[in-house]
Image (cartoon, rainbow, N blue to C red; front, side):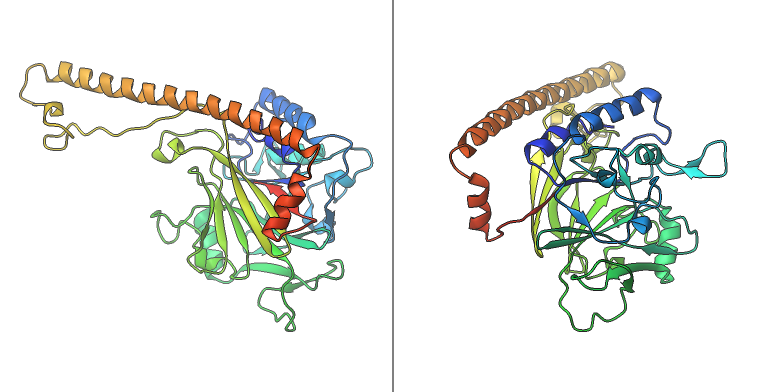
Length: 385
């Protein structure tokens, strides 16, 4: 668990909410120390007296079935939340049975204690029905869809069998007492909801046609897909193969496996929404452990240089191999140290920039000028993902 990396950014950027697309924890049953640290961090950065600017206009009892009172945490009069967290479960922290008949996830503990708004869980085994959380801030309306992790083969089979159903809001001017099916007509009305879909599944990257979610399965009317599970950071939104929505893949905030994708610079995303327009600003993480990978081929003819080739008939081939590999690992260690140095320098630069911006805003409303140049205006909906 590593929210301590993005947490200062959430406060500095004055986010309206935080969105986790699964795997808040790396283990299904986190230790008591991990849970204690998690709650400490959330209390430090997410609890306070500042009012929350977003309003939920959908049926909260349907959205937050796992909470105690069936409503978002910042509307509980006994708690003071100024930065709400919305999270779905991933494949590492999915619900399991623990000495009873009810399936519980680690997020259930945070949900029942009002630290996290847990959504997107599907309890049916033969069908999936995804109902959105409808969020409103000023004139901006966001429909947030979530789907917690499921076995890819089962989900793929249900999707192919048309047993995955997305509900859409009836209209923008009234609270959501009911929803329309995605296949029903919208009576010719223009869609005024910005649709976000957070999921935690395999992408179609060579794992097999039935062991992933294909981009063509996602409804075309989505605007932005926040794709969890994949560890490589591809935070800049890419156009989908369908061509009607974009996909951002935040990746893991820390390296959890020894693969090439983990060596890519880690980022979080700051998503600003105004009406149906959006922008996502990548923010590099500086408090992460430097990570470097490399590949070595010891076969004859595969070496980059002729002097690097090893002769299998050489009686000292094992000694030469150890020397060669040791030198290669030493270069990787130097690369990682250089990356760590750059990360620390970046952190110092960001801190200085933040201090300068804070001083500048005392005399000039920099945020309003920037929004005006973009033609986005205010109010703006800001999400950290």
